Length: 206
Image 1 (tube, rainbow, N blue to C red):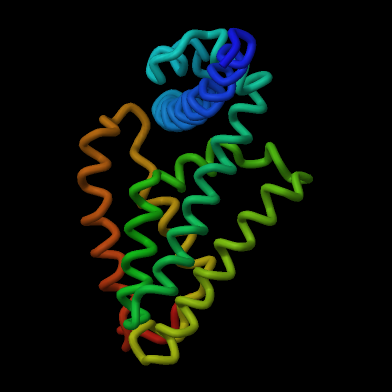
Image 2 (tube, rainbow, N blue to C red):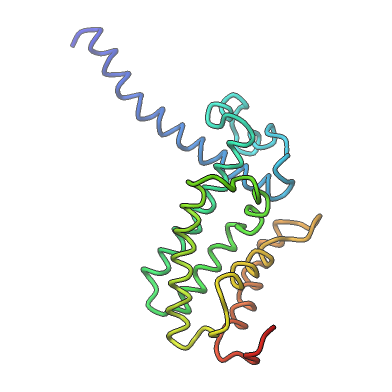
């Protein structure tokens, strides 16, 4: 094999490694940004995001053009994960109330309520964002429909009820320790689920 062929082969072999490294960096930045935005808001220094991700600022800006691009991609990433969680629970759990439990616990663990509060109003005309959101909503509503028809979910509970309460349950008080809150979020979800079970103690809710 000639020197030119050897060099070309080395480049071809290195390309997948570079792509894998870039993908890992992308995921690390998204994860770090979600944590920073949850703790300190969307105006947090991007230097802190890069530091937590273990990358340099130049690497961050190679992946994300600016702050708004990063915020959008964090939101898209979390919403896509929530949609995936709901679809997986729908496909794998034969008991619809267990599917609902699995879905709500997974959503809580991702801090979805805080992330969506951070990005509220930013992407009102973003069709891609709402397409991903609608995928998750459809899976959630199908889980709820099955749980309702099985007689396990209160008939007066709507998707808006569940999502609104979940957003509140996964949002720590200002200034509180996020780490300890995450440890308690699962307990809050279980208490909430107990209230969702049929029969309702009072069907005439306001």
